[in-house]
Length: 136
Image (cartoon, rainbow, N blue to C red; front, side, top):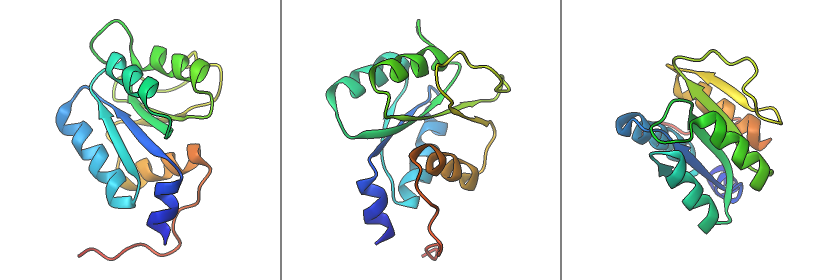
């Protein structure tokens, strides 16, 4: 039941240039019951956002290759898709004023799965499941 509710909450877009970390984040989210899509850069993320209407949140790194970093991507998402919750991650930056017009959840790297899941629930305004699934 909890997984169905999370899937109904919308898809999570993961934007991370490190392919191993990106896969790990997607796995963390899908293990929790979220549907997730992935992009390796801001341009790919914008393409996905323009072609799908079911994204509810985005988890993005700050430093990525290309002309647009995660902060600029977050600002663009805020302008064009204001309903999408945003989690910004970074190992180099420490939060503070990110230059985005609305609050975003900043999650410093490295992070544990439970911190990521809590951040996503925070931007989606959903609650953590009271009973966790057992590992199989």
